[in-house]
Image 1 (cartoon, helix red, strand yellow):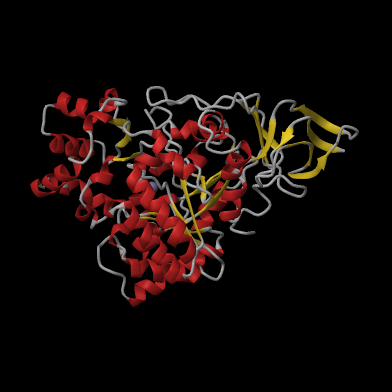
Image 2 (cartoon, rainbow, N blue to C red):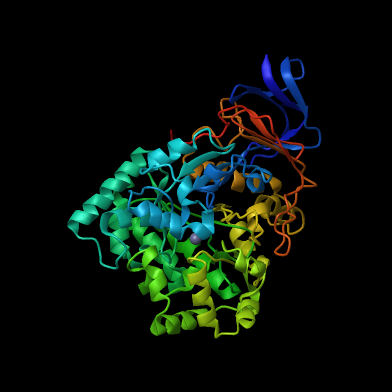
Length: 520
Ligand SMILES: [Zn+2]
């Protein structure tokens, strides 16, 4: 007797093998049979005629860290078929912390995750954070060890290199993070504290995870140039003897893209075990405070506000700002009620409305909003990411940033629908089987998710049922809160969380999502 048989569908198992008409039998949290199950008994049967059965999707780069704690069912993600989130990207998150650094991170991350101090329940280690998530969300989660959190615990926010004692502390925390189940170390070398970390420091810090095969996952030093940043990441991986994964890798001109991809194909893959992710859109989204000169961060996030009044800081900020198109850069979210009328409005609009020079207007806005201003860019041609999406080392990372009341980037809602939909049907970038691989077996294998990512007997029953003709993204910059179409049913550990493209309300407690550990 099966708990569920999903029958008459076309099964794409995640391995890139061609689809086959097979039934899927589930008992408890596992897929126990695949084949012709028409004569078998089941408590429940689901007719998937004309539909695809695929393994649950894995998002290797996102900013869901605290949203998974705050919201039991993150619908923008599950309606795309994502069953596992790899959290704590870019080297910045809510663990590990101590009682002194926890308030800093909650303050700093406000425009990514909106965790409030009253929601902080006292966790400190990565293991404690992941234990708090277990059974709290409908999705599974596994985590990176975020490097800035570690570095700040060892030596504070300053620009000095760690001394020998501090480095031994950092290495000890990397070992501890791996022991607590991390997939490896994440860095974001344009973010606070981490932009002060040298290549040598990062190589030394990452070496302790070499034995377990922990990944060096990095938002490279984009301000130094993408190719130079990728080369540095490869150098770090080579020296530390660890695999390298580049986060949200893209280029903005055909020449730059050729240079990056030819470096990857000719050199990177020879020197290290290499992979990357990107969301299927060219325009990005990040915090306004990202543009501030590095020196304002030397005393930590709480030390930034007074420095924003200094004329020389404003002058340097103006210099950085000059590289952005203010009329095509939009305010996606900020916490203040007074300024909420500017959500979805361009920075040019805001600057004109307040009637000050741009750098002054935006520094004052950062002061008013306690640094928490999220931006979305609307410029760039999405076709420029196609060569990356089609690349063999590519897997999905949505980089989704969620605010239910924000004018957020559509990647939060549409990434998987776009990869399975227009990328396959309209642009013919790859087959549907390849698209599923990029969303399931490739990320699951790379990030050490045991018995997930492939639909086979014995695997966990993380399953997506979708319509290959109807699947599509609908979210736009003007109207981002639009769920994908064509993702019909989603199961996590054998429990249905999406039925007929809608939220399943009567879920068991604890919720089906589990905290996962690297390779275990
Ligand atoms: Zn990033």
